[in-house]
Length: 203
Image (cartoon, rainbow, N blue to C red):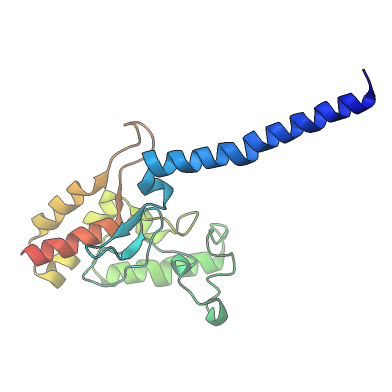
């Protein structure tokens, strides 16, 4: 068998595999995602009644008002900082990522004691781990049910609601373990706050 014939066969095989792997398969997956999982394939976007995008169920947002359930701390301010005016240096590690500070680092200890814990204590909130420490991505959209319940009294006072109403709201918006065994229950802060606004308007 000649070298030219072998080379021709190799080139044809490469082209066929390239078309299958780089063209047909990706477009097939895009079509499958749009048909079977359109919500997830398009970023799990949460929209209001007018169709305006409020955020993604996969990416956290900063909530700091007493009228809302607050998110966990973020070293990147949930990527909302202006890169040109980043005086606090929150975007030094990029738009996503942890501070990578060791537990013994004085900056980390200072931030936890003088900022996070102090803010929680002044607001009358019992500190939980996820209200004190940042997540690995700094974009975590969830807090634990315990962290949500720790904020009930503050929100009930600010909105003049019964604490039991907020307890029920937390229970209704708590996501269980994946497949019942993986991970821990969590509450999506954006979805919980949207439900909170609907609860107020219905009151």
